[in-house]
Amino acid sequence: MDQESPPRQTRISIFRNWICLCGLIVAGGSMFAFLLLFILDALAPVSNPYVGILAYLIAPGFFVTGFLMVAVGLLIERRQLKKQGPGSTIPVLIVDLSRSRDRKNLILLSSAALVFMVITAVGSYRSYHFTESVEFCGQACHTVMQPEFTTYMHSPHARVACSQCHIGPGAEWYVKAKISGLHQVYAVMRSSYEKPISTPIKNLRPAQETCEQCHWPNKFVGNIDRTYRHYLSDTNNTPFAVRLLLKVGGSDPNHGPVGGIHWHMNVGNKVEYIASDEQRQVIPWVRVTDAQGVVTEYKTSKFKPDSKQVIRKMDCMDCHNRPAHNYQVPDDAVDLAMSLSRIDPGIPSIKKEAVKVLTRQYANETEALQKIATELAEKYPDDPRIRPAIEAVQQIYRDNFFPEMKANWKVYPSNIGHKNWSGCFRCHDGEHLASDGKRTIKANDCNACHIILAQGAGAELEQLNSKGQEFKHPGGDYGEMKCSDCHTGGD
Ligand code: HEC
Ligand code: HEC
Ligand code: HEC
Ligand code: HEC
Ligand code: HEC
Ligand code: HEC
Image 1 (cartoon, protein in one colour):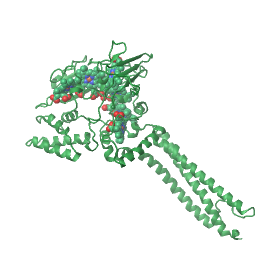
Image 2: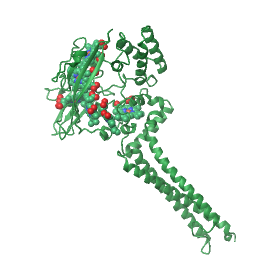
Image 3: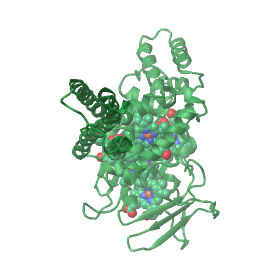
Image 4: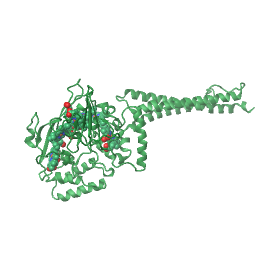
């Protein structure tokens, strides 16, 4: 009896069918978002991990959920119909347009659906952009990432997103990054993160999948002409510059002769090594497999075989390990500021004094900036040139020293070159003997990797020699020692 009263039937029927309708909206919205993301992904020059995840995992997830809702709605509907038996007169239509109440509801629902679709689309787009953004990676946890973010902003990669080197394309690494990201958020909340963050990063994605998206080993670089300007730590801040022709060369015979520094990346060769310390600064074992499959092993006398040793294949990051986060050594940073006249080279002993205040220990940045200012101002009380110099030294501090994270040049060695760290001389030190016992990895030959075109100061720098000059070390010969035994960047 009760069942046959029409208003109640309608209410129940509409309620049941709203499940279907909601499902349809969810499905429609995600469909729309998917289409948008799909177009975005298709048009982007480099495929992006985040668009991939959103477009191919999350949007379809919502799509399926929407359809499941529709199915559940229909199932409930059918059940109810069956219960009411064959004689029931419930309208089969999901929405009966002849009823004004249903019409109103439909209009309301359609508007809601439209708004929802727009929100989903914009939302997906925005959230993709946000999780990928440099702001999110570099500034969300301000103190923790400040050293990396600051150095990155001063690097040649300041316009390459963090995710392009640290995650790269593809869903697999995105998921890995998000899992390790959760772990990091937890560490930040508990303040249990490392200070400084230790390197090398254990699971850094191989260069082939990140750097080589933009630079590839097949490119022939040729020679690079660079001038390294320095000032000695004497009263006159005597200038001393070296002009080098770096033989970077190339590694693909289709584009130029294979050789020079990028020989290591020879597309046919494989260079592998074992490091005996965490930071990969000591390399007692190297193995080269050439294009013909000939294997040469090089060892130092300190090498002891051990089953736990990890053999690493050399890639770009074994030399270019600071492409985005170079913590300048105080020596070089002051030299640069002086050569640009930000610090006046006419101020007596300023090189020495500037490096001295930079290499002190300070509790935090505020203290450092204050003490740098007072100390230099006291040293040069009557020199008007000291004000801009103080500002320049403070800027060097802000850009390269991060006492809160204990991050500075000392804890992050740079492997390019050989002056302040072993760098190339980790292998090219004349101590790596081939298994035949006759050869070592090329070393001591100062013209193997570069030639010195000119050196000294003033007119001396004009005297170019295309065959290369012998290095005239300031202050005389340095003997048999490695450059980095004496040069530590300051302190
Ligand atoms: C050009 C590629 C590149 C870009 C862009 C880049 N990084 Fe790095 N990053 C590296 C390399 C290479 C290392 C050093 C890895 C090693 O030594 O194992 C590194 C190291 C790090 C480290 C470890 C600590 C340190 O200082 O070495 C952190 C943290 C980090 N990057 C965060 C970021 C953040 C945040 C951004 C964006 C603001 C970013 N990176 C952008 C390539 C990049
Ligand atoms: C998204 C593209 C992109 C990726 C990924 C990338 N780079 Fe670069 N890289 C650039 C651009 C752009 C420049 C600047 C070129 C220029 O203007 O000279 C550059 C410059 C460089 C330079 C020359 C620096 C200088 O002092 O002039 C080196 C070396 C380099 N990149 C190495 C790397 C390494 C190593 C990686 C991987 C960790 C990497 N790049 C990843 C785009 C990229
Ligand atoms: C054996 C060490 C070593 C390896 C391995 C290496 N490079 Fe280099 N690369 C150098 C040196 C040294 C220079 C000279 C410039 C310098 O000192 O910064 C250089 C220069 C460059 C430049 C700058 C060219 C320019 O025009 O300014 C780029 C870009 C570059 N390398 C990319 C790469 C990439 C990508 C890889 C990996 C495929 C790689 N390098 C592997 C040592 C290396
Ligand atoms: C992991 C060890 C290792 C490191 C680090 C390394 N090299 Fe090498 N390098 C080798 C080996 C092995 C050879 C091949 C043996 C030889 O020719 O003596 C080689 C060969 C070379 C050659 C000769 C290539 C040719 O034309 O035959 C140059 C130039 C060179 N390296 C430059 C550099 C520079 C510059 C750096 C630092 C930025 C560097 N290497 C770092 C292992 C290394
Ligand atoms: C295995 C390759 C290699 C060998 C061998 C080598 N160098 Fe270098 N050297 C480099 C590279 C690469 C750089 C550039 C570093 C950079 O870009 O920061 C460099 C830089 C330099 C500089 C400039 C450093 C600065 O900051 O002013 C001097 C000076 C120098 N080398 C002298 C020598 C002398 C002297 C020898 C012989 C004992 C020698 N090199 C052997 C690879 C080599
Ligand atoms: C026995 C210690 C010692 C060794 C080894 C040594 N140097 Fe030096 N070097 C010095 C001293 C001391 C000065 C003078 C520093 C000053 O006045 O600031 C100097 C100055 C320099 C300068 C100019 C000023 C500066 O600080 O940049 C350069 C460039 C340089 N050395 C490069 C090298 C290179 C490259 C090697 C390895 C091939 C090397 N040195 C090996 C002790 C050494």
